[in-house]
Length: 254
Image (cartoon, rainbow, N blue to C red; front, side):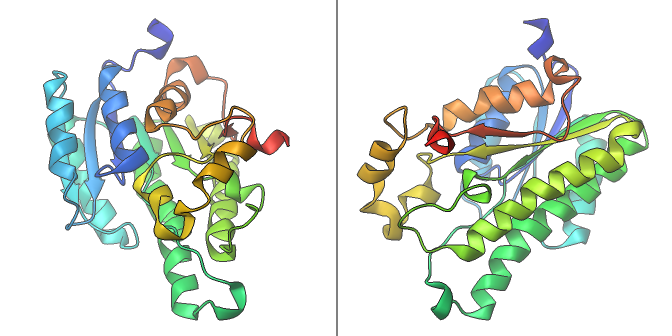
């Protein structure tokens, strides 16, 4: 179990106020990390995440800002290191989803999705990388989606799919750029997962179909994203970089 022990690590998690981000933040703490939790100023769940982490006996701090704003991220990383110590682990989970036929998709909706899901991940990696590269050690895990590798039957979300495909290739690109400088970069591509994002009205009627089409026969829980995130963040993955880890219940096999 020492391979998966994050004791002594300081983690920074974006999108930590809900869904996968919240559960990964608490999961890292369960394995010994102290965690800085980042989300929008209006995130009602951020304080809950902090409370859950502290209840585990780990240190936690909250930073509020927007992943599309480089200055917000720079300030948050500085606050994280000032409060908890040198950053060693980061998980970038902030994201949005929506559905719209491509021929009706407004440029503003396309741009917002790209700005948050792709540019936001790049800016997060950039801020985290600047801190970690100076010490020659660290792990970054980006949350992509199986929708970055396949096109979901029945969902009209070219903007979302494109943003997540970008996250996968961004992660590989950064992994290779930083591999000789001690920093690993990987991503996790969840399949259909029971988060607020997948309880959206536009996908509610398709939930039963999602489960039928997934070989394992059900949607994932957010708990099932913790193990992959801990693995990629820990010494157990010391020889793993540039990987897109599908956590999709076998969906992409069919």
